[in-house]
Each structure stands twice: as structure tokens, then as C-alpha cells.
Image (tube, rainbow, N blue to C red; front, side, top):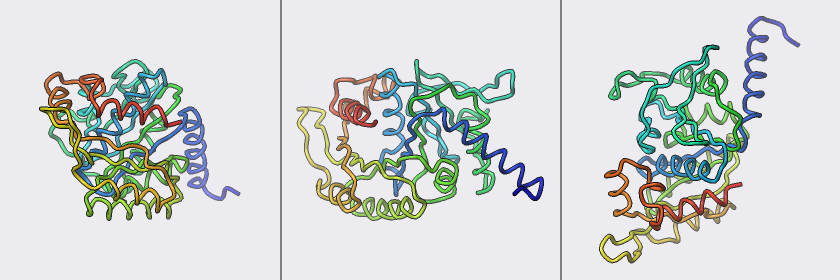
Length: 270
């Protein structure tokens, strides 16, 4: 029973949100426990790989203090608005539509000084007040940890399946377990674990060697009852080529071990 205008407004907003989410296909929440584990690179290239498979793909960056999705895709341009006043995401490739706070800033070095309630409202607007096309899949790139942005995604998009990115380093695994506890507490499903930078592709000989023992991420996945989705190598030659060509890994070095592993990962995500 609606008792106040505030109740009515909340219900109307929830209805609007539910209707929009119903057009956005399968939703993935790419997260990590620690920064610097390559989470954004994974999110951006997974979205790119899905788009290359012909899937209508959306990618939303909700890292308000370090938005890097557009940088990972080497995508430039500011977000505009349509005649109805809705934000229009950047179509950075055929089938790939991207919205990042970075594209809202007139100064690329500017900062967003937003607190929790403002972030929740902004993420809701990024879904309901944006002219997303009908999508097959939708990726959300979140800052590491269990802060406001992650809580907002859990509240607004509870049907998201999380992809937990970690390295084999002990501190990364420890923080990944905390994030897994957060996912359980907020009832977000966990699709699986990605072991990133666990191996090194030698730029001279092409041989692959271990950086971290592989048993850590695998044991983490097993303890959580989910699959280890992929082991992505640190591929220095591919990364150097990506920077030189100003293209994401999948396009700069499609035959490289890391690009092949990312493409295989995208292929198994239903």
C-alpha cells in the first residue's frame, strides 16, 4: 500500500529500473578484492570479445574515482544526450556500447568528489536514464573491494553474476575471499574466478613460466564451489604492442596467448 508521495516515487523508479534491466540480457559484475590485478583490462576485453562474437554488448564503468574502461579500449569522446534528454553511451565498436564517468568529464585529469548516496543515484541513472539499446549481455566494471559502488550494484542489479579477478599472490587471494564473502552476503551469484597474471610469456622465446603458484586461485575457486574460468598470462609483448598501436589487446595482438585466453573466456560465458 502506497502511503506517501515518496513511496510512489520509489515504486515508480523501481518499475523503471526493472523494465530497463529486462532489456539488457545477461549481466556480469567484474570485481576483485585488490586493485592492480587487471580487473578493468579483463572487463573491457571480455566486452570487446562478446561484441566481436556478434552479441549486442554494454559495458558500464562504475569506478568513479579511477575510471579506466575507456582507456583500456583506447576510446575517446564525451557522452552526449538524445532528444529525450537521455545519455547516449559511446558506440566504440559495432555491438559495443560503453558508458564511463571518464566520458562525462571535460578535464581528463578531473576528479569526481561523490559520496555514497550520490554514487547510488548515479549508477541508477546510468541504467535508467541512458539510451542503451536492447542488449544480449551487459558488463559492469566496479572498483576493487566492497565499497559503495559494489553495494549499489548489488542493490540495483541483484541478478548480476560476478566474475572475481585475482592473482596468485597471497594478499590478492586474501582480499578476494573478502569480496566473495561480500557477494554471498548481498546474494550476488558468483560465475567463477579468473586467475590473472599467474604466468609470464617470455617476450624473447615465447615460453610460458609461472609467476605465482597456480594452486592458490584454483583452491579459492574450489572452496567457493565455482569454476576457475581462466588463467590469463602476463604477456609483455602483447601489452607493448597494444600501447604502441593504441588498440586493446584483442585487436592489437589477436594471436597472442593472452588474447586467445580472453577470447576463450568470453566464449564460455553464457
